[in-house]
Amino acid sequence: MAEILLLLSLILFALSVAPTGFRGIFAAGGWIFLAVVFFSMSFHYIFENEFVYPAAAVISVPLLFITVKGCLKNDRTALNISSVAAIAFLIYAAVALWEPLATWLIETQVENTVSALLAIGHPASVSQWDTILSNGYIVVITLSCTPVVGTAIMLGVAMGVESSKFQKIIACVFTIATLAVLNLSRLVFVVVAYSEQWFPYFLDIASNGYPGFESFYWAHNVIGRIIFTILGIVITGGGLAIVVPDVRKFYSDIITFYYSGAVEIKSTFFRKLKL
Image (cartoon, rainbow, N blue to C red; front, side):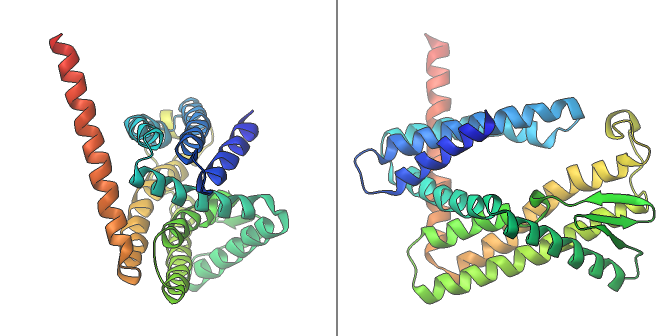
């Protein structure tokens, strides 16, 4: 079911880019189907004592409402955000669905991570094509462990605003390079923290029944996701605003759009309370 909803979301986002009179409707549908998948996936993690994704899902509810409402009104900023999402979605789908490329990315990530670990003097080896072995602990690398998601989003931003071909090329190179380095740093941190048991805390909620897993939980599921996501936004997102000046205007439009939407929701809520 999730695959079908994602496919529908992808198709609708792609249609929203086409110059038709239904761009807003297509974009709104794309966001709704994508949100259903994200919410169902996020709350599934609750049973694994995962809280980052569920928290993100809760926070995203008002943002989704504002975005869909804006799309249905054919708001320019909402449609621009949807165009960026469409580009990012298409890039990710092209990588994820092309198995040889996805496999190559995982293999390369494993080899680069092991090389980086050895370079800093930490014991590590390639156990299997997608697995890192360090101090007896195993870390399996999946496609989501590569920087493909973040890269697709940032490339969507770079390609979705007005800029010259040269600026787009520089932006793409900058995006791929910075996120590759950040992701490599994240994986090195996770493997070292896990294999050296840096965070043996709150076993009841973090171990999932596996001895030592709590260090992986805190390093990967919490610190890795939150801190390195923030770093990616600041370093890569900030760098794009320098490379492509129109990205700054895009950021400003996004802030204004969601702030205005939040103020409208707040006003409507308190107005109904008075009735």
